[in-house]
Image 1 (cartoon, rainbow, N blue to C red):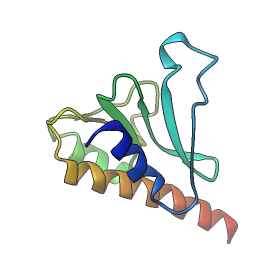
Image 2 (cartoon, helix red, strand yellow; image 1 turned 180 degrees about the vertical axis):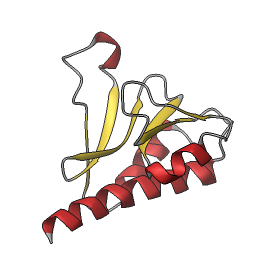
Image 3 (tube, rainbow, N blue to C red; image 1 turned 90 degrees about the vertical axis):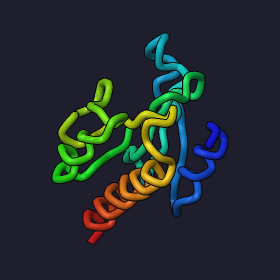
Image 4 (tube, rainbow, N blue to C red; image 1 turned 135 degrees about the horizontal axis):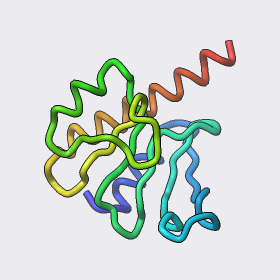
Length: 116
């Protein structure tokens, strides 16, 4: 899967928006593309490198997932709620798609609970 296919997959979920909120803040983060449900992030990655993505994760699953080669602590986000996933082959695309889907669902469910 290339960067455009991955971007389209992330945008395929209902009510998803994308943005580059760090463009003017940090030199190394100008190309970070973030996907949101409402105003909450569920996935982000560097457009230029496209080697890792960072995903929101159920805290109950994080330790189990980190046993996989290619799934680790995130850069600059809480390791209690986020994981970093290698996009260069050590993690299958089926698992990556499943983790992105679960990340989206986790955030979307949190937003719908707050509305009720």
